[in-house]
Image (cartoon, rainbow, N blue to C red; front, side, top):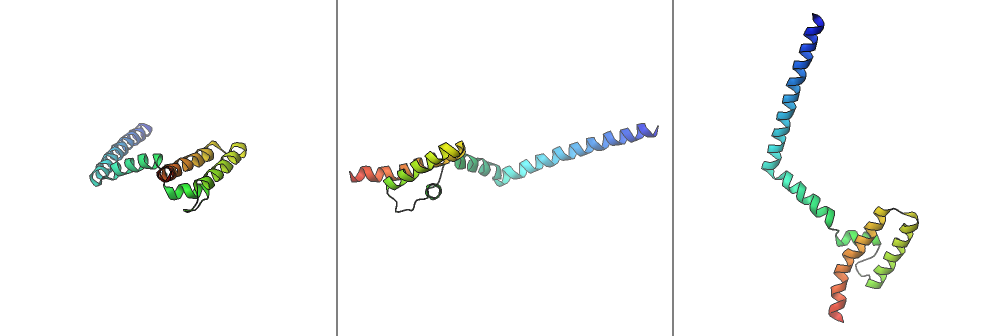
Length: 114
């Protein structure tokens, strides 16, 4: 008799806790959508995964703002080759993305001066 009562109490308690959890989750989602936090987080994730800033690209390649395109290519080749031997695919992709980012900045300047 006591075991049955204890089992019923545990089942009822867990049901109440599950309903409270679901209600709290729904309220959290409602609050996030009211504040625009959810949309902002999604936009930041999309933006962050696709874009690399010029400062980050320069930091990855180890070049200054005054570096020429030839210096950038030399650093890129050096880092890419070193990572091909001992590095990871992640590091190689970061180096490649950094070169691509700086390429979009330097190439139009060189084309306009030619």
